[in-house]
Image (cartoon, rainbow, N blue to C red; front, side, top):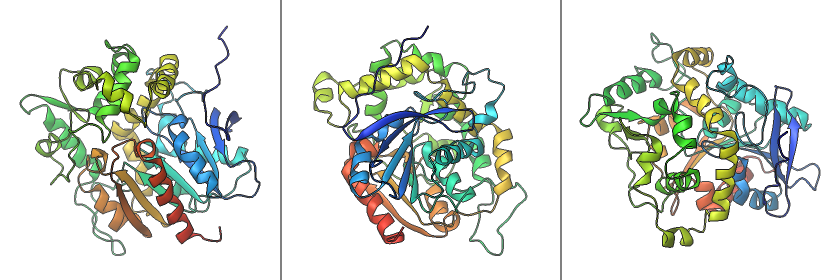
Length: 393
């Protein structure tokens, strides 16, 4: 019999509970601002390898601004249970974007919420938030994408620019990405893309059984993607090609013969640096390590498998040519390579995909974990955006 889980060490006024979302999940949800009824709602969607806990520093500032804030552990993560998260699952469709949107809609329905002021997504949660806004603009009144720009639904191979949309790329982003990734193996030394590595059968075991230990692996991983690592000198790439992708740091474009723990190990911060890391203490890191030691990474990795499998890309062409028509903005750290890892995505998001796009905010002193590295600034940007767009929501 499994022992009951220990309560998460959360800030006061943030509560944790389990909610049946009606889509096969018992979702673990963190909430703030729930004491007062009738508040407009903000939904926060985390990425990989993260948790609802990743929003702990942002939730109270948003609640103090007058919002009810909801942050779930998404499908395959943390304390949310239900479905088959194994590599051998017969239901990989459950991890594709349409079903991830259903997960969020089911949670809102269970909570009696018919419309939210905004859906906010970080990392892999960013495209989930984007798909929420694209598919159900009647529910999601605005969208904030963080750290991963959204270039829109995949296009048909024979499609061109339509009469009523700005110019669409001649080659779909998915096809261009696949060609560039295939070319990485021909470089000297040979390289591989982390999303394809994450889609393979070995990634979960590599990380779960990292030679340096799970906590040390996560410390190095989060450090290397943050503004604390001097190697994050970001800039746009010129094109989607193997040669251009090779400019990305090794946590995105890896040596072909290395695992992710091996990739980040050489950049492990020393004890003095860890002691100075105000945005991720050892006690906070221990929460991630304990949660992933219990669940493994495969649930989150199954999301990547859908992203690199043409079958699931093809299914999304149902929405080819559709746009996000609610107010939208993008937030990232100025030291975050995630902004540039797919050349052209930011411009596509701004010009073609989001018809009411407002601003790109690149926040100084932050890398990929922008909501943890600079939570006050992120909260300020979100609140200002929402008050300008829906002052009477």
